[in-house]
Length: 489
Image 1 (cartoon, rainbow, N blue to C red):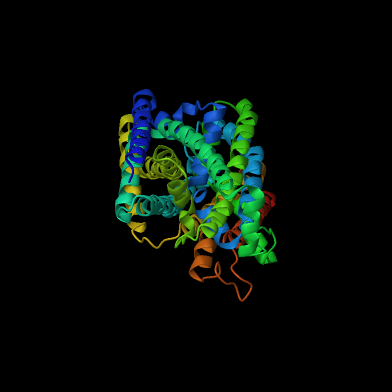
Image 2 (cartoon, rainbow, N blue to C red):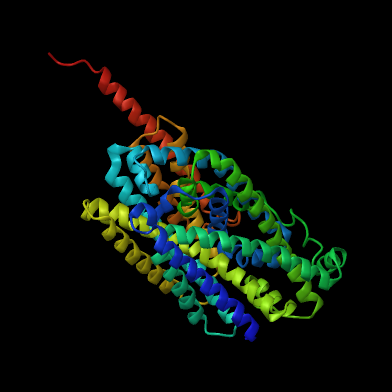
């Protein structure tokens, strides 16, 4: 590896650790500061933190890899995500920020649900915390796989070294700096990511002779390479755009809505966040298409399409810039891992330890337990990531669907429908999670009776929504019948 690349990466790592130290000194003395930053995030920090923790290595590895292999038709995933993110900012953000503060300053999503439906407090807190830790462990593993692939592909280092080094750095600043460290590092990482995603396609297109020359190369490879509809079926279209449904139930994203300074800041944050997302998605598409043309034009081979960003960074740029671009990839990976670790830690601390074992635990004790929980989840995720053949997009898809189906309908209806009941909430949460797990176990996400793979979030989200509505209505009717039943004399 070039010394310039090493210098850039070393500066990046030191910068992230420095932010962790700053946040540790500033706002980790109590659980509210450690888990939610005291609800003092500015619009810009909240927006880029939500975006960076959302996109992860998927944006620079998974999506470009899918587009590289199959063409522009895979862009429907990005289109679905953009629409889902916009609706999330419009529908969920203001309501969640307002209601979580009103309900005695909720620090976690399970805590909000428990206070929203007090008759099912323990069930909601325990089940939702289990779902969060389960799916976030898988999701975190996806990020560690990305780190492993980066070190193996770009540096020729051992895959497992990359996994554990990535985990170690994220663990350090997340454990000590808490939510503020995670949010500030996310902001900086989001800026690095968008610069890299704009820079790389421009340089690659310039090297190929411009957009016209690039499109000629791509159409020679496959006339349908630039088509949004090539080979697209109705099931495929629905499965791709259904990714957008997942936004409503992603705890590591919507927790940023809880931490923003005020409801009045949300429109500004939405504008910043959606602008960042639009540019980043277009950049990822550009990386994939320009990368495919570059590989073809130069007679190169690429064994793993998910490493096209790494290949272009190595071949097209000075080592110092290469280090910056690889830092952008690490930023994408680490920003999401840190957010997931912190949300998992908050659930284990508030919704297990405090709720069931130590109701009178001191603030210092809760912060300590939170830090230990971060370490436990990171180690479990590292063990899942030991297989170097794991696909980033596949792991992310499974975890994204799990959260989207389990929490998406639950969050939307709890914020927008006054007739929802605690029994309906528990039933919907279980239905969404179990349908996703069962769908994956049956292999129907790969092939559903000859129709092609049906993304598991579709049946999970629909059935969870129906369950919440039907059970809540039935419970309401039961209460009405009991109230109207005449008393015996």
